Length: 361
Ligand SMILES: Cc1cc2nc3c(=O)[nH]c(=O)nc-3n(C[C@H](O)[C@H](O)[C@H](O)COP(=O)(O)OP(=O)(O)OC[C@H]3O[C@@H](n4cnc5c(N)ncnc54)[C@H](O)[C@@H]3O)c2cc1C
Image: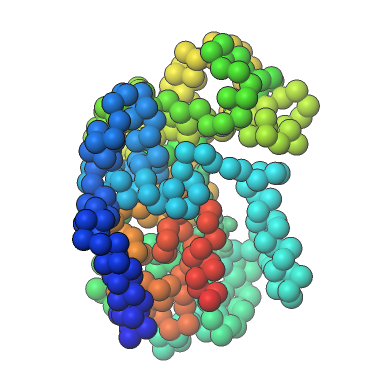
């Protein structure tokens, strides 16, 4: 680390010491602890523990028995993506639109539907980007919002980099394990045991910690459990503009669906409909259209390496100054004037905007 980073780390260590000996050791214990152990210390109710544990494994390819899953829980809580999740009016895309307007009003030129083919590197320095149209834009700095694997295999040619760095890029852990299923519905499904207010929140099928661990067990061997972890939201309840009048959209998070596994889009859609029909018996009859996105679809359509939603698994070994690659934290890369930002960098995935703010500062 640089002198400034060493000072930052020392300040952090000082803050930790300031908690006193007992609290300091407790913080360290929490970071490495399996979330199962944490919840067993505090709660008795099996269903409650299942619900609370789900956030600790959300988006990662680990089960709740794994060390470090308490850290993932804390990460979701600190980025505002814990138990009570919010969306934006007009959908999450409305946030991008608002940011785009703010940037344009400050003079930024935005080009959409334009693909960067590669970063132009001359003698170890990024000097511009080449677009798919063949146009080269010369720049002083290039900032890639893409993950380390994509940036350093597709945008920068590996021969520009040291073998040691290329090896580290290959060893970033991705193995996405979430599929998304979106349903267009002719009307609001009937969940007999829930009132409409409850439907405005997130519905979670994670009845126990063991349920989550068993679902993960299947994924370890490349399979999808027939008792998966499911989260459901109906965004059109909060924002009716998302569907034609009377219709609704249902957005479903399905985990674990391993990138490195046998996944059939039709089968997982059928599985989800079967599980949800146990709670909403009329669901199937309301489906007008389905969209299934597996980790392979995320990779092909959005260039997310191995379909990982957060630009790399959010584990302790890939976080803080180890993210995205040990030795290349603080948004720097081995190529001068080329920086990384976005979910692949500290503080990781989610829609916090913090990585972008940090690099701008
Ligand atoms: C299905 C799904 C569900 C999620 N759910 C949640 C959630 O509920 N809560 C939450 O907090 N987070 C969620 N996340 C994670 C969150 O969306 C990401 O962490 C966040 O969007 C990352 O932001 P980013 O700016 O790093 O990258 P992105 O938002 O992925 O933006 C990268 C942009 O770069 C563009 N691009 C790609 N390649 C090129 C190229 N060659 N040239 C030019 N442009 C290119 C892409 O089109 C894209 O617009 C979810 C992610 C997914 C995929």
